[in-house]
Image (tube, rainbow, N blue to C red; front, side, top):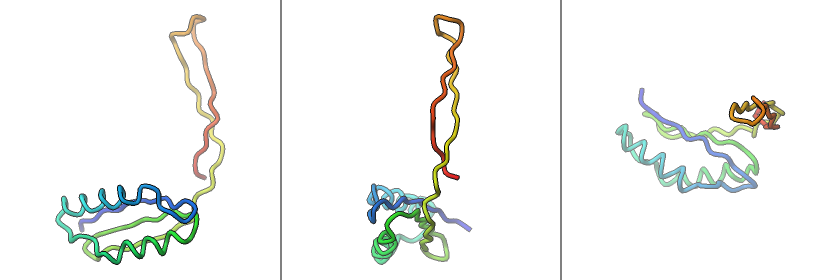
Length: 102
């Protein structure tokens, strides 16, 4: 079965880069030979965006398009080390605080 999906982050009730997501999805559908998205899907995206903060997964396949809504995963601290071998004193290691979803 052919299909594709687009993961979309909703921030404060809006979809940043909404049109870019839709353009990419339309191009993918055309590439794999599936029908274009119905106009109604954009209204449904807007309805889902009203959730405030969320992650949407827009899936399109032979069964038609569907939207799933998930909560935004909580970030948790993650340690990342970077080693540089061209330092003046042999080698340096730097730790950067980063965050990743739990």
